[in-house]
Image 1 (cartoon, rainbow, N blue to C red):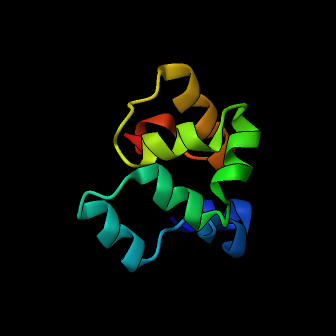
Image 2 (cartoon, helix red, strand yellow; image 1 turned 90 degrees about the vertical axis):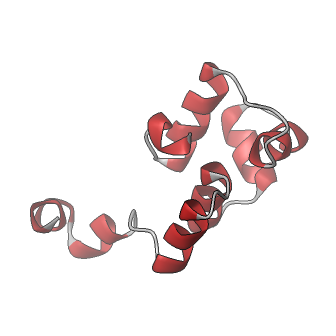
Length: 88
C-alpha cells in the first residue's frame, strides 16, 4: 500500500479505496458494478455512454436480472478503472 501511494501519490492511490460503508455493502451482496459506479460518481447514463450500451441494460445487470457478457463486463471494468474480476 505504501509503495503504491509513493508511486502514484497518496490522493491518487486512495481514490481507488472503498469506504467501510461501501465494503459493507459489497459484503452484504450488493452489486459490485453499482458500488464502483457510485464510488466513481457516475450515473447509469454516463456509464452506459462510456461502454456503448443502454442505461436500462446496465440497470438490469446491476439489479441481477441480466449477467452481462464478457465484453460488456470488460468495458464496464475499463470505464470504472476496476479489474473485471472485481465486478463479479
